[in-house]
Image 1 (cartoon, rainbow, N blue to C red):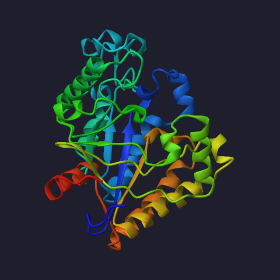
Image 2: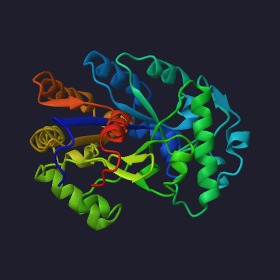
Image 3: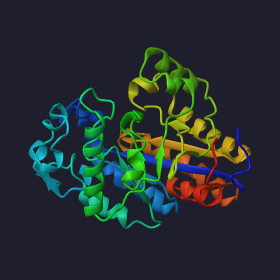
Length: 323
């Protein structure tokens, strides 16, 4: 693996901030609320912990969440997107459809201290880029409208994550001002995706508390970098916790920090804020993780940096680097 890029290890946290947009093709509002009780409040609770710990992170936000409201599937912003997706989107505002529209939280995030990095998650409506009805033109429409929505809310996104890690059309990203995106976790379990074999390997990694791999930035093309994920939070719902205790998630997080310190690489930890509400102990688990992270930072062992800062460092200091 590559060495010598950084003076010390780096930890970066990234969150796919989507609420019910990430489940448009899966289930409705009632099922979402039952599975993720308190999902709306989870974003504020997470941000509180970061600001209290002086931790900067990368928040990938679905563009439509930043809207004050919309006409739902009939909104002109959604013209050209798959009807199988947009027909399920309700008209409304944050007051009437808070699982869909969260402008007030976005404004709070925008003004948080320390400054949080705000990137774009997928585009306007979390349309998955390898959906059967999505071609290059549709993906570009989704991306363009997502960037437009975010700019209207006061942020120009420079970083990006694909919905469900279904990567496509990378060359569209710099066209719309994106300089860095999160790529897939470089382990066999995640390369296998949502298959039985992939699920079995991910469970095995959790049960044995496998060390998450440190990663290094990669120059995808001129002006575009990727920072791969090291590890996603393994779900913490009751059915998973029967097999794997919450403490395993904390242990793997700590091992990821230690591996990044040893290798002077990046430990890139990712999750959806909603995931923290699957268990009543989700935020206690997070507190243990953040305590380990800030202790390592305060000891001078590791830096904490959002993704965009890593990409900017690479562009300044190693513009031709390829891992």
